[in-house]
Structure formats: structure tokens, C-alpha cells
Length: 197
Image (cartoon, rainbow, N blue to C red):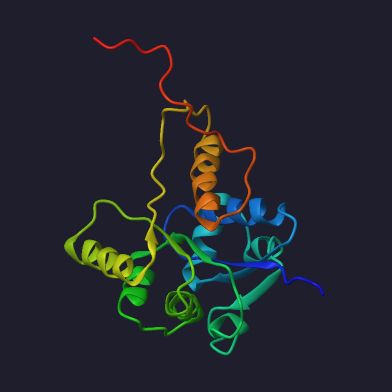
């Protein structure tokens, strides 16, 4: 009996940080047995062009299946369609608010709503700074619903030499959250050679 692929929904919204969504699609595309389902918000096309110089069709070519954001009848809009998680990379404050309040007025928000109601893994890479009180309350709300709020904040303990290294390190953590085998991830070995004062 054939086992179905591991289906991961990737949504890219208009917040800054489009590179996270693009690189996540590339990383997932290289994992055998993983099938990616992509949804781009309208604003995402603008950000992709501005930040990474890619057209919508180029990004869509990185996914196995592409759904239009207005396609509320898409497979990923139903809990009966089995998926293994969703990442919104990056997640705008508008999308965060829609998910926090259960609006489900487009496919990104509806797919996230489905993931939450089916108790599947939802990773929201929220991008804004500084946060206002509405942002914080919405992050609390989605966390209480079961989502993981994951601002793509760079770490420096691994001494990244490029933006790509910073992006990859963040995505290593996202793949871990999805339970996807990731042998090239740099793992923290603990502090070595540090002497206590």
C-alpha cells in the first residue's frame, strides 16, 4: 500500500522576509517524500519582487501544488484533506489578526484555521517591529489556540557569515518544529572552552 507524502502548506504573505518562504520551499523540495502546497497572498507578489527579485510564477514553480488565495474551495481548506503542518513565512500582522480572530476570509487564513482545528502544527513567522498591543494580544491568542509564534530573529552564536546562513539557521529550527529530518542543521554542542570567572 502506498503511503501518502508528507504534506506541508507554505503560505507567503506581504510582510518583509519573503526569503524565508522561498528558501523554505527550496529546502522542503529537496526532502524525499514531502509535498508542498503553496499559497501566496496578493501583497506577497510585491514583496517577493522587491526583496528577492522573483516573480510569482518563479516562486510557484518551487512548490508541488499551488493554490490561489481566493480559492476557498481548495483541498487545503478542508480538514478531511490530510496535511502534516503549515508554515506562514513570513506572516504579516494582517494575517496574524485574521487567524487570531478566525476570519478565514482568504485561503491563507482558512488553511491556518483548518490546521488549528485539526490540531496540526502551525508555525507563524511573524514579522513586525516593534510590536504594538494588538500584535501581542493576537500572538497570545494564536498561541492559546495551539500555533507556534516564531519571529525569524537571527541568532549569532553560530557566527553567521552571510544573510543566507542566518536564514538557513532559522529554517533549520522550523524544519525541526515540523519534525522533518534535517541532518545538515548546526546543533548547539554546549559552551566549550569557556572558563567561569
